[in-house]
Image (cartoon, rainbow, N blue to C red; front, side, top):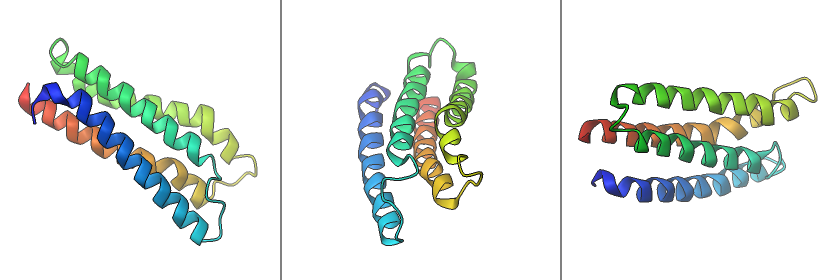
Length: 129
């Protein structure tokens, strides 16, 4: 796999992976008697797709110019994801005063999948450049 194909492969793997994960996640919620699309599940997955793509493409496009700073781009992207979580999702989770396990997992399941995929592609990029 050469680096020129990364901008095509990454979004495809991200979308397919998160789509499958989303339906699996909602299926598990439904089987546990919870609302399958509750806890801002759709918003969480969409936020993670957008942010993972932005972080990946920032790293990809600046891989030659700022090679020594790519790790900081990656960490900064994770920081921005958490800031956006606290701005857009957390207030809805804290309405009742308690952050439930299902609410926690609604954000962190897609976040962790995106994080692993971003990390994999960052390592591949750093090894080839």
